[in-house]
Length: 447
Image (spheres, rainbow, N blue to C red):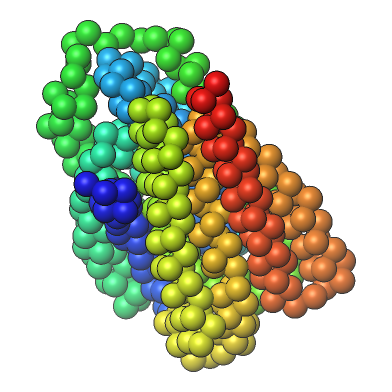
């Protein structure tokens, strides 16, 4: 199978999986925006920001990425027992972290939400919602760890099937819990409850699939043991990757708090635009994870030229898909936004449409950034993406948003112009770093 075909084989199921998850979020946001107004949108936005920052930093972009990077290189080098050890010990570390994250949200959720700008009724509504949401995310985090194993072993279709099972379960229980409630009184906790059920069902499905593939994936299943050395290898790779996501995620969380002080109108418009734009992230994220896997396997084989080709193919397809979204966001923003608001909230729709149109400019740079960050992790360089994200999020984005939004009180659209500048610099630096690292890798191998 050629490099380009291999890229598509690994990437397309991942993109489809992430698209399904995105539509689950959009489905919730649309229902709440239509039937409960911008207060419900605020609650969803704050809760998701709170829970996702922890899950994203420590699991999704932390342990899971470390596992994919290490396991794929072991498979490329045909070190199958070491790969199996990474699976076993990675799942142990990840599960412990997921439990700690859930505990933190339960105990300190109120204080964190208060720091984020939530007050009075919104604070208590969001806190109750977030506790249920945290339980749901625990099972989602475990699914993410199991899915990382399938991805590293080139079974990226399994995460997609898991997402389909979760999506169908979510729709079914949303209909049971939410539509009947909407006839009388809206209870936003029903959305979190349906999420909890859908992620539990998804976890069961994913675990059964892992058991089904255990001979192929964990060949020496009975001989595996706890290895602190293997755990430390995974953690060593995961920490910079976690810090990379933290650099971006925490700065975004602070920016969300700044926007919250601008009022519910600006916050709702920003959340709706972000929710719609998140669809376009799927190709970049999918091809970025594929780049980590394929580059890792090539590096494990000692095929540096093949690693570069895999990264370039991933970047090409990510650019092609995300530039298509740029055209949609630029020419049809109002059409997309109207699904999230009722007729009385035209001001929110107008602001969200303007934000989305500006977001069209950053799509190509997001594609480049995500793919080459993934490629760097495939090489084993998780520090480079961290330092780049730290620079663009904390030195560029955060100070500019604080100055223009909090001090000068600019319109919410200024946030999107600033973010476009951030992604532009981020994408260029990721590309340069990867080219530098792959060039040095070639020279080291020659020597």
